[in-house]
Length: 244
Image (cartoon, rainbow, N blue to C red):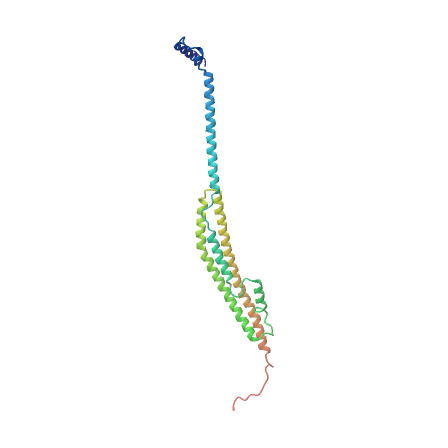
């Protein structure tokens, strides 16, 4: 610092000699090293503050970009295909023949067609009820097979949707896209569970109709046997001439 001051004093003397006696002291330029150093430090601090502000703005911009990615929606949606698969299964269940999935209809059938064979029913009514029960059992088996075929047909669609959703989930750019892909995978699992429920319901319906048919046939068989054994006055002996 002393060296700098000596240089500054020498510069002032040289400047006074150069200017000569015609210049006044008010026109001299004096170099203050302390003031200069302070100005340099102030400029350096200002520059550092500017750099800090630039870094802060960059961080805020990156944060906004990340938020935009997290709020970006998934460009792929399998909702339409899943709804169509569920609709096909629901329509198939609604097309159930004869005794469908209706409690009142089931109660009516078991109070008439599947009721116990009483002695007040004619043989024609018993035969008609037996034929109706056989037709119900066959319709239940056909409906079960149709439901199974529909669910098997949905497997290809489900496989395609699952592959697309997994790919979209792995390539998600933000939290919202990953969450939406996960929700659609859950919806796909729910649709497959609905198909499985439909198959179980249709298969159980067919088995129950067949079991009810066998039970009603056994009861009707006992009634018809009773009628056969008690019909008329029974056997009476009589004289028969066989040869002339």
